[in-house]
Length: 185
Image (cartoon, rainbow, N blue to C red; front, side, top):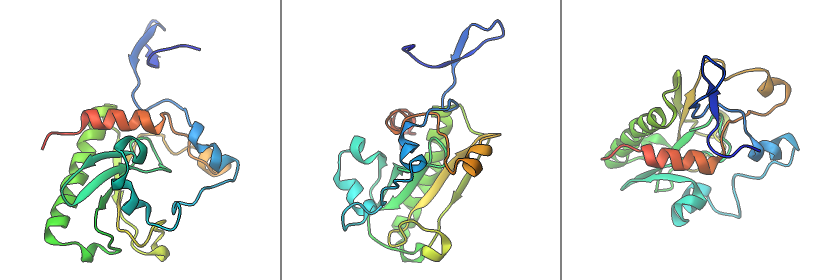
């Protein structure tokens, strides 16, 4: 097994530049492949209320603001898939205060900048929130916004045939890269 960063070959076929988020490496997704899907509601509490009370490395928190925080999605669609969450337990965007709304928006922009800096820049982003279970929210009781980086060709046969999404990086490694790339206030 090779140690060190994974690289892409240069024109001569020799090791080249590290490829950021583009490798296929998904050991954490085996719970999905095996069909043993853990509940996003560990215990009886809200995971988005619990995360700020844990160390950042354990909760996958990337940045803490005054009223909101950015955390990696535990079950990401793509590497760098972040969630922007208010600390306050509210279900609807309309429930946010003006201060929370401003920071929610600012952290969304900062998330994009961090992913761009850490990954070399994806081809695009999906940004949005699902309010209510009927809209597809996995944790409907606590508002959160998804910031999902997208690359050309990132949707292939595997999500359809294997009902899983291959991710090229472990969450801890992604978190470290995003923390290092997070823009200064």
